[in-house]
Length: 184
Image (spheres, one colour):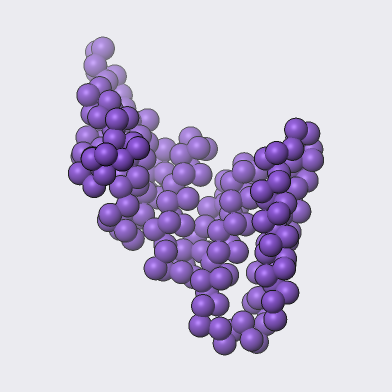
């Protein structure tokens, strides 16, 4: 019953080797192979009676979905990435904050500001202590800032988001950027 794990490990090998490729076609091929391998691992685990009796089955499948989503994120397949991170979050509610944070990151990278703000609000609801979620919510809110004359006006809640980050992680690696954002 560990065939799914073999496919999962194979997926990891392709996913982790892809960024090292200089040829874009080879890189994309490795991501596609990784995605297929992860999907096979998910399907095998889903079809296994032994796996269904494993108390940590959902956690394992969630990890598979997370890595599959990561492949899609790196392949710029935003919808597929978001869908699979969300599946992971549903299967493993205890770690939902982390999976949902990945959704926010993908949407931020895609420039989908409104969707990203919603995503980081979900992270904060799942884990109110996840400091980086407040920071990135603030960054996306700044993306919605408007000009009044020559003054930049950020949406409501922007300053609060950066302040909350600093409250939770006063010496965190995003503390200086958060202070800079507040100053501006």
